[in-house]
Length: 337
Image (cartoon, rainbow, N blue to C red; front, side, top):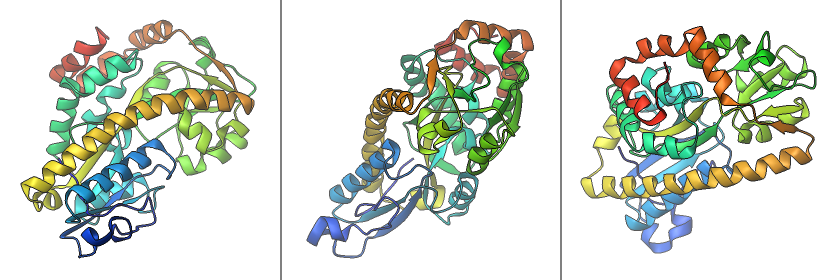
């Protein structure tokens, strides 16, 4: 579980470290890796990835060069996942829900209404749940970093025709979800009508009323300008999702132990900073989106969890993930079934 790079990484520009680190970085790097991520240059995740790569470049005196390509420059998440598995790129910041297509257990921390706070999330992800997911990722031939990065709690937005405050408000609600069985199952269990639509087509789907609403962290609501076609935002926190920094096994194995240690230390330290960044960004985004005309409300999660219990949602996913993984999750969330 490591990453590498010698210079910096121009967030998406592919800039080489020599421009930033002077004489120490003039010689060609021993290792030159590409890291793909879907977030824009201004997103805290991208910024902290760049920061970590700079630290590795300095500490290794230019032996490792990791270039960060932001904003899906190397392809969409499924495409980048295929590339890192094949070795076309060495590293990727993989959204946990996208990764769950290949590694089903990656979706375990995103079980609906499981976590009630970040304290629970980080205790689980830095503890037994994170260990369970990392082990599953490793079995696919990918190498995960130790610490998962934050993508945030997901919220539900809706058009001016419907404000969501209760389970009953979701009955028959046409909502866009990513292509994941977990979220489709979640909203079906709540009586909604989920549709899998790519994020690139989401704005037009909302604008033309193919769907009435969608669910995402606030960062995506802002960067996608969804506030232009959505009036309400329910701070549902219906699931948490993160990013795993994963590497191609052959590429990671090619690095000597000292460089691997530098990479691990730099990126895990940056992950902790990114977590704090995202909390602060979330607070500021709520204020900004309010100014842009969105109205916020905070539904009671207890009724939603009760509805999912009644629908058999938790029992279904307990069988899917297995008793051991489910027990690891409930150690931090309390009893779900």
